[in-house]
Image (cartoon, rainbow, N blue to C red; front, top):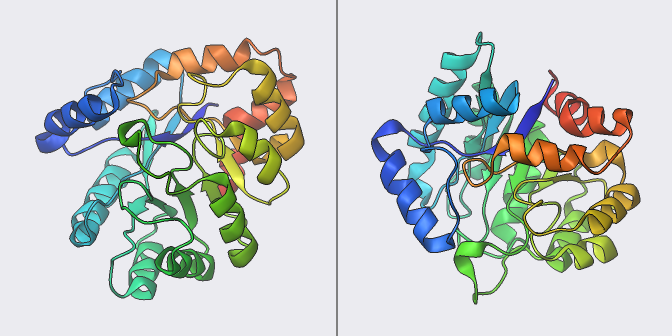
Length: 269
């Protein structure tokens, strides 16, 4: 089985516009059209069985519409051979954080995505701390963008490894996922500051910038039980990323954990 833990889809009516804007801002080439059917096609080509959709709230008033989209996707694919499981989103300016997080849990969604850069808030802000504690109280997974965002070059990095370490010490919760292998394009700091924490790293958009030696150093220092295969599709291609990881010559047991076992355990599949 292959689980892609970090993908993005959008409602059909806004997918084309959204993808075009994001591609223009980041200079990245999309590999799908941003729809759920586009993601399924990429999964079929790459041999993925499950993808996790991670929606980002750019405004707090998007909470309900994003939650309803997530529920519709989960219902649509609950019995499909190729399955998309959608998380919800949270914004640091949302009101009634505890109530909203309980609602996410009550409707059967596994977790949330936050994005400090898109949400213009540093990860150690007390509003994010409140979200993380609420996630802990409700046993929800939290995935956060970490490190540089290519659409925000020249601006402060809102979730660098040093701030992630500060937050992890404070919250002490083992269902946090730091996207982009702990910190996109800041992997030397990840190796120095984050590998001793009980936190997951996903590999989303990692193989474009990291070299094999540094990838393996982080993997073996952090532990193969805490790494999740992920692509950031549509911004990377599932087949390509899988083949790059396979080319590293890792033991089969390690690959099984990265490709599916760690994610299955985290998701309680």
